Length: 67
Image (cartoon, rainbow, N blue to C red):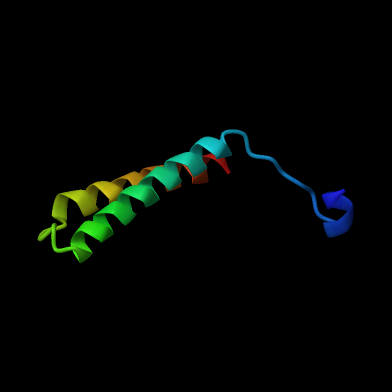
C-alpha cells in the first residue's frame, strides 16, 4: 500500500530494532549525565562524555554498514 502511495520501493532493514534500542540507551545515558551536570553533581565530563561519544560512533558505524 505504501509503495503504491509513495511510488517508491519500500526497503526493510533487518536488525534496525536493535540499533534503535541501543541509540535509546545512549540517549538515556546522555540525559542522565545532563541532569547531573545541571544539578551541579558533575564537575568534569571527560570520561563519561567520551564513552557516550564512542558508543554513538559505534552504533552509527554499524548502521552505515547495515544500510
